[in-house]
Length: 463
Image (cartoon, rainbow, N blue to C red; front, side):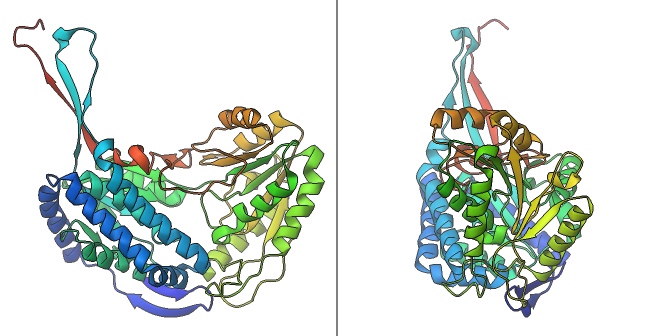
């Protein structure tokens, strides 16, 4: 695996980094385990100091971190800044709530003779975090903040195009006062994944990535009998019912599909619009996309960033071609994008009926699938006709109706009258091919802890 910083705006290779050696991986495991044995008994208050310090550093040095994220994966500088702040908020959330989330639970019993059962939540060891490139900081923090707060150690295998962002976490956590060994970035080669997961000191793996990556990593973890959480792809439905505010819904659709250049697992990839307002919505959507300005992501006037790499743009282009071969209709929308770098022209894709397998694909970039729904039931049918089940949105002026439709969608998350976006104090995760497990809040911090029953029973109680 070649770790390199390549500026997506210019395609310039800025820096390259060597893969970790087997010895470096083994050293990291040994130091992580030794540090864990102390950290597991460290108070929540002491752990919280580190989390708060990391948050403060991110807020203080927001420009430095944001520019690094934009340099390596190409997102708009303003979006990078928002990501850094979100990361700080996640650190602060666990600093404030970890102790309460993991406090012992007294279990009710039907008969006092059953004893005095208590459920305690104890850290398990080293967690391997395998993270993607689309959110260089947030993806990492949503694992390390809860897991370090729970008393675990974390080893990071970040995306190969983010070597400097990955290394920045070593510096960040050291400056925040985290004891040596509890967190380390590794430029791990492919064989190292199995090496790490087969180590008895490792308790599991948290992966965010593609279906393909999930299949491979879950298989390795399964053979090693290690816990895994999988946050995989998504093809989120963005349902606009006939009673919605069409103008506002269209504006949110433009944002929901094109933030981070459309490279978001919870991006609004499938627009499902009621027949009565379809034509009006599509016209407004096209106007909104046409107003986007592609250019230098460091320029505050730019509103459409390049993709993360030229390879990503080429792969997306090939995917669109295959969809067209299957009968999809593709319309170019928006202003022309620069020829340099990893830019991709926004496209609107239709004619994705039951005969076209492309309706089940995830297009990771500014390619919008559009569907015309006959009514509410048809919109729900189209939305659920997907191998994915991550998130979704429903737009309607009737909140009760929106909640009803949301309950009918087979996904892990649904937002009414707004695009889905991650928050520090809301859970994140999906079902079906979008993976399993949850991140953030109490669900996330409890993924890699031992839920141990301790029960005090009268010695003379019946067996």
